[in-house]
Image (cartoon, rainbow, N blue to C red; front, side):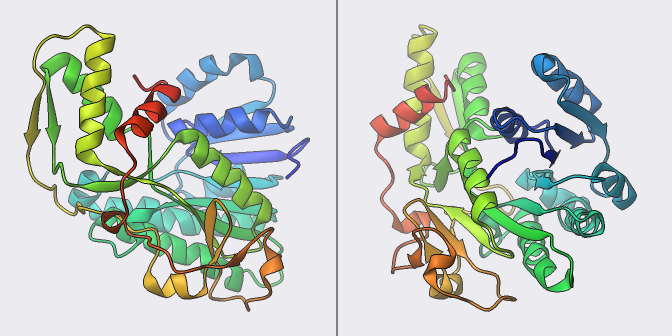
Length: 337
């Protein structure tokens, strides 16, 4: 997709993914990228990091709960990337209506603002926790996904295209376990783990951004795009991090592993899609595509190099985790240690 000369809005743009997406989009020479978030300090810090691009970046304070503010932020915008969310499972569990207001009502506010302003394309970021959700975060993201898919139906004659990407765990993103474990190893010589037998789908931040840009390019409306991700065993992640951090900082103390049990709403494994979605999903070499239930399905050439999904496993507890050497390579390549 050609973003040259285009106007882009990144909602929740001060986070790890938002900043990396901004770097990638700047390479396409857009006319302007508006960074929308509610944290002025994060905006101040991002302004400093991106000072050389100040002529093409605009920083807007606002909250997705405020529909009127979103409408103003989207004036004359071509493309919207919606990354804002309440995403920490325990906080969503203890503050469920706050999660509803941000993740569900905020998404609907964004949809209405995009339709009203005639935005060309909207891409929403979801999570594998939206599949068979056991917590407030996953349930709120599932509802937001449904809003995105149904927006294709409710938009009437408007031309805005809505789609979603479903992420796994992004290595090194703000709030992820890798920075937490790193800090615990250095400061406490211990790692606090909920369950060492837990499995997770894992992706690098670069893979996540690549998925977003590819999905935005080929979306036709109402789809959910899912990266084909490998699984990791939490015990392997802990052991590799202990080895790497100890070697980097010359630690000779024994690092203690403490299992504390699952937190409220937490799952032992994750799923990429439901069994029902598998029945009508498409796939390419690097992703699955779940089409909109509100649009008639057409031929496989509607997506480049896509075919109907073949029988495959989409649950982390039934897939073979990647080996520790591969996991170590990912961690070092992403400069997480």
